[in-house]
Image (cartoon, rainbow, N blue to C red; front, top):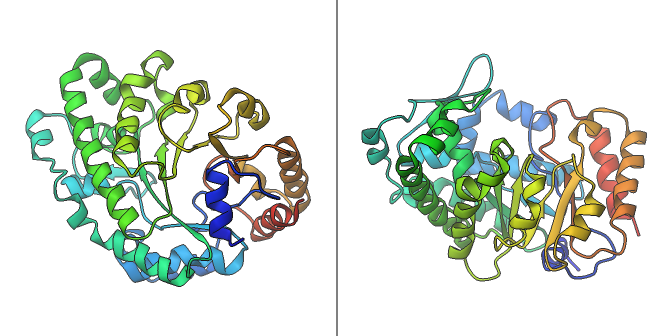
Amino acid sequence: MTSRERFLAACACQPLDRPPVWIMRQAGRYLPEYRALKAKSSFLEMVRTPELAAEVTLQPLRRFALDAAIIFSDILVIPEAMGQGYKFRDAGGIEMDFRLDTRAQLDRLDPVGVPFHLEYVGKALARVKAELKGEKALLGFGGSPWTLATYMVEGGSSDDYLRIKQLFYTDRPFFDALMNKLTAALIEYFKLQIASGADAIQLFDSWGGIIAGPDYEAASLRWMRDIIAALPKDFPVILYAKGASSQLTDMAFSGARVLGVDWTVDLGVTRRLVPANIALQGNLDPVLMNTTPEIVRTEVTRLLETMRGSPGHIFNLGHGIMPQAKIECMETLVETVTSWK
């Protein structure tokens, strides 16, 4: 069984001798080869250049026996393609070119041309697909409408998400109009990724956890459900909502084949709560990758034993790998998973 077959079998909750493994944000600053490339090109240049994006995507697979690659890109390419660009603040965080707060600004956002503007992502996916030769799975991804809207309405990264929450509660027509545009753009974007070779799509609801529980459906989940319903039937979609573990039961009926779970919940308990035909991804605490190989081996083994006998498990961190992660810890994680029986 190839790594690609193993990954797709796990998405379908088929029994396997071990779970497939990949890591969210698996390319990045913890790798010296990434830092060397970053010294020559900015992050946005790497995202927008298919050759560079493909190279960064493949770097972790040359070091580690991972079962899947995730394309190197950024969730904010969607608002950028619609007409609201972004950059990185010198002090850290995201800054959008403008704060979305008027109907005139909203009317100018155009989801129709998104596939044309993001053709470079499709080209990067196609390059990686050719390099993988069908042996490993290839993932595309995007941010949820709610998560993208937080950056667009707040004007960038936020500490309190005051503006997006106020918009949701006080001007639902404006909010829904924005979400309709984002949903339409993401559907076309994901179709582009699938046509370019993606074997699965991960939908990141990174800020889903900031919504009051009773409002999660209206603010976020209904829009993700519409996206998944518009994609090819039974295509593997991984839905990850950070900090929204109380919504996992509802997310299990979103149409997603896999639910990503953050590190704050017991994966074994989650397995008992979620329908058996829904696969789970996760959920090692990313901070452990900054400790020692011995600690990583112990905690990875503990998590594997928690899921023993449960089909449909994809091993991953509970969130993205940190820049401070140690390569020897990553090596230990992958070796522990791939040798586990």
